Amino acid sequence: MNDALATAVAVERAPRARVEQLQLERVRRVIALISERVPLYRERLGRAGVRAEDVRSLADLRGLPFTTKADFRDTYPFGMLAAPLEDVVRIHASSGTTGKPTVVAYTRRDLDVWTEVMARTLLAGGVGRADVVHNAYGYGLFTGGLGFHYGAERLGAAVVPISGGLTERQITALRDFGATVLCCTPSYSLHLAEEAGLTSKDLKLRVGFFGAEPWTEGMRQAIESRLHLMALNIYGLSEVIGPGVSVECPERRGMHVAEDHFLPEIVDPVTLQPTPPGLTGELVLTTLTKEALPLLRYRTRDLTALDPGPCACGRTFVRIGRIVGRSDDMLIIRGVNVYPSQIEHALTQIPDLEPHYLLVLRRERALDTIEVRVECRAETAAAGEAALGALATRAQRRILEVVGLTAEVAVVPPKTIERSVGKAKRILDLRAEGEGARNS
Ligand code: ADP
Ligand code: ZN
Image (cartoon, helix red, strand yellow):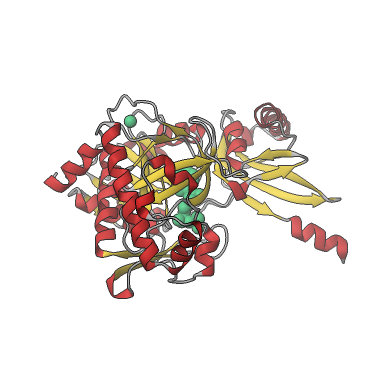
C-alpha cells in the first residue's frame, strides 16, 4: 500500500472529534464552492441566506436545503456541475431504475477520490496484490463496473473485467483464472452459483462484494453456502459517486460510510426532520470532496438507519444498516405497507424455497393485490402437486407472520423466474393493465 492510501485508511480509525472537524471544514468548502459555481445552489442558498462561514457546527447542516433527484431532472444534463466541461474527464449515468437516468460527471481528482474509496472498500475484505478480482458489475455508463475496476487495480490486484452477462463464460473464467474475489449484484451471484453447480466447490472465491440492489441476511446465507465465500454488503449511488460510499467490514454489522468524503444523515421522509440514531429513515448524503458534482444534503430515497456505536474492527466511521428499499419501492397492499425485501426476508426462512422470486401486482376493484411467485428446490418440484401446495401454504403463513400481509403464493419449478445479470427485477406490475381491461 502506498502512502496516500495508508493515510486514507488511517482516517477510518481516527478519533471522532477529528473526523467531525474534518467534515466541518469540508462542508464549509463545499458550500462556498456550490454557491459560487452552481446557479441552482446559488439561488437556493441565497434565498435561505446561507453563507459558508455561518455553518459553525455539523448540527447547523440540519437547517440547510436538500437536493433531490428532481433537481437533476430540472437541470439535465449538466446543470448541477460545479466544474467546467473542460475539467470533466468522465461521464456516467444512474441505471434509471426509477425513471430517467441522472447524468453524473467526474474531474480527474474526483476519479482519484473514487478510486481511493473503492480501494478502501476492497481492503475492508482484505483484497490485495495476490488476488484475482472477477468483476461482473456492468461496465459502461453504470458506475459499478469501472468503480470496482479502478479500485482493484489501485490495490495491485489482477482484475478480470468480465462485466455482466454470458454466464457460461463467467463460470469458465472464474474457474480457470482462479478468481478469489467476486464483485456483482447479489442476485447475479446466485445465478452464477446455480450455473456453476458442483464446480462452485472447486472455485477459490474467498470474498464477494455485493450491492446495487436490496438483499437480506437470508440471501447472504444462500450466497455464502453456495459460493463458499464471505459476502460483504456494499452501497453507493451514481449521484454521490457510485459504489464506494459504504462497505461492511468483516464484522458484518452494517456498512461503514467513508465519512471523510460523504456525510450521512437520516431524516424522516415525511417531516424531513432528523430521526434519532438507530431509527430507520431516509438516508441523506452530502459530498465533502467532490469537484464536478458536489451535492448538499442529497435525498437518496434509500431507507436505512445509522449506527454510531463503536465497531469491533476499530473503524470509527458510522455504519448504515441494510437498505430496506427505496421510499418509492414501498407497496401498499390492502393498507399494509411493505417493501419487496421484507417478503424476501420471509421467503428465505423456508429451506425448501429458492431465493428466486417475483412479485406480481394487480388491481382488482380498485384494490391492489400481490402474488408472490417463488421457485422451489428441484427435490420439492419432483415431490408433486400436493407437496407444492403445502409449501405455498407455508410460505403464505410465513409472509403473514413476518410482514403482516396476506399474499397469494405460487410455488413454481426451479429456473422458471427470469434471471438478471445486473439489478434483479422483483416486481411485475400489471395494475395499469387490469384498469385498462376493465375500462375497455
Ligand atoms: P438507480 O437509482 O438508477 O438504480 P444507481 O445505478 O446509481 O441508480 O444505483 C444506486 C441505487 O442502488 C441506490 O440508490 C440504492 O437504491 C440501490 N443500492 C445500491 N447498493 C445497495 C445495497 N447494498 N442495498 C440496497 N440497495 C442498494
Ligand atoms: Zn467495522
